[in-house]
Length: 88
Image 1: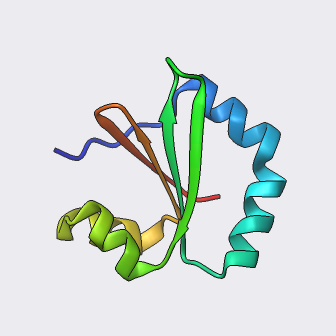
Image 2: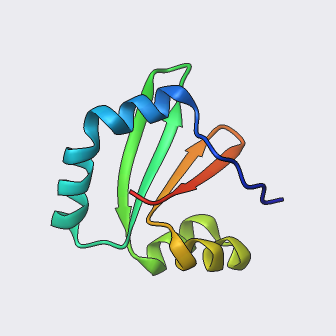
Image 3: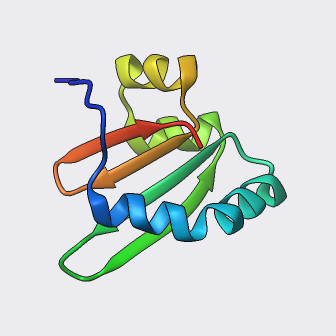
C-alpha cells in the first residue's frame, strides 16, 4: 500500500541536511538517475547507493512503485518496513 506523507523521520532529514551537498556531488559523479538510502536508526547507519532504471527495478521489482518514482522522485529512502520518496 502506498501512502503519501509530508515528512520523513527526523534522523534521516538531519542526515540529508548535513550531507546534501556531498550526496548531490556523488549523484552527479555517478551519472545515475536515483539516490537510494537504506536506513537503520538502531544501528545509526545510512547506506547510499546510486542506481539507474534497470538497477532500481531489479531492487524493488514493483511496477506501480516504479511508475510513481519515475514521475517525480530521484531519492528513495528505505527504513524498516517503510519507503519514502523525495526529490533532492
